[in-house]
Image 1 (cartoon, rainbow, N blue to C red):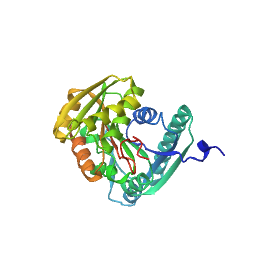
Image 2 (tube, rainbow, N blue to C red):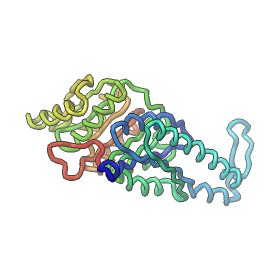
Image 3 (spheres, rainbow, N blue to C red):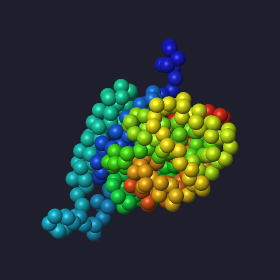
Image 4 (cartoon, helix red, strand yellow):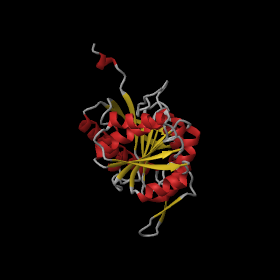
Length: 296
């Protein structure tokens, strides 16, 4: 058996929001997974809370169009879930076919957020969609979307719907291993999307010749032909990063996540300030002078 055959594939988990459009997530998937050897895993969660609601006689459903009230019908709800599940399964199969990679589709029954966090903890790259607008950013996972950053051992992509709303990829990084990993992924993403890369350097980014040389070397290795601009950000705060992202019309913000707790807090703040995709990258285990954006 060849070395390629026995090498473990990158586990890419895709969680699609049943209530929002899905093409954006799959477009981002194509861009993020283009240079990997992934196995795509689609996850559809049948939320246990919906079943509980159907069992409560006092819970009513009100039509937005007619204002007519009616009780929740478990059979109707299960049929709607089945239709959504089949639609998502077809979308994932189409994406896997385009990427020429294997895939599988999993259905989980339980608490929505808990099932997502459980599956995310076993993935190398996790893509989750969020609807347009600040409210939609937290819609289907509630206020806990940022918790994924502290759970997934690799890369988390919170993909804005639609995906292609901005014109640049913004990498926010310092000269550490997490920063190099984030820059490597951002550079490949900009190359895949054929857009400009803007590198916002936080504290430590240009504080030493070694740090700058490491970042420049990473960029030269990953995407030497990508059009790049460098911006000194100073202290990396959500307010400063959000201001730069809006000014640059960022399609995605890519962050190094050396400290998952701090990165989770950063993402929580950015979700309230930005309507673009946010990607966090963990440094690879034992990273030294070189980094891998996959975090695997």
